[in-house]
Amino acid sequence: MPSLPACCSVLELRQYTLHPGQRDVLLQLFEQAFIEPQEAVGMHIVGQFRDEDRPDRFVWLRGFRDMASRRDALHAFYGGPAWKAHRDAANATMQDSDNVLLLRPVREGSGLSHPSPSRPAPGTAAHPESRVELTLCYLKAPAEEGLRARFEQQVRPVLTELGATPRALWETEPAENTFPALPVRTGEHVFAWLTVFPDAGHHREHLRRRATSTAWLEPLQPWLCAPLEHLLLAPTSRSELR
Image 1 (cartoon, rainbow, N blue to C red):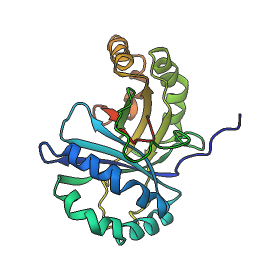
Image 2 (cartoon, rainbow, N blue to C red):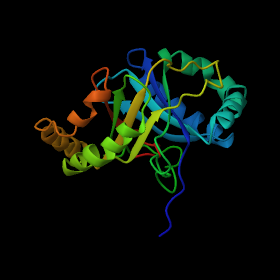
Image 3 (cartoon, rainbow, N blue to C red):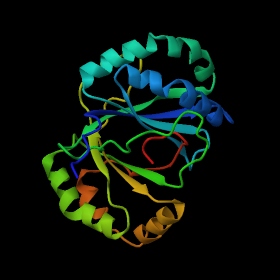
């Protein structure tokens, strides 16, 4: 079977802090009104998620072919009819929408393949049982080949043994923000991997096993400047990544 094409050479990891009780309001609006219009102008809405550890946090991943197409697509969407019609309702749910990291695959083939042949249709209500964990490593300096090699040689095999094979691997995209109207976090160096678990039970079992091992973390220590951040994410009913 031929391999699926790579998803995106530029990825936004967007974490929104919402007003209490507003997450499902935003999710319903997002899945009804914002997915197809964004993809129609050249973006790829990779997935949208409930943060399981923070009930007022909405997380989503949005991808682009490159930084130039990101600029053009964002101009088209935020100047277009869908956003103009629904922006007030969307913004009313949010306390903060500026927690955004720009990422890129660490090398060719390390990003996501297209997650599924098709996204569930509008109106789909069933939530998938799967869980997504996104691990963020904060680095002292931009990721370099020594770190990438150490991850592949020493970290990935241990994570796989612990039931958490990484599905994608990213690092900070250093290019200047091509759409300044939407701020992104700057001055940080991130190395990140994403894992998909069949359900919450498999993730809990991985956490149990991970807690007894340091072999996956120790090889990364020379590069780290802060504790790792683990995002535990539940895909929504229309999330493509699930």
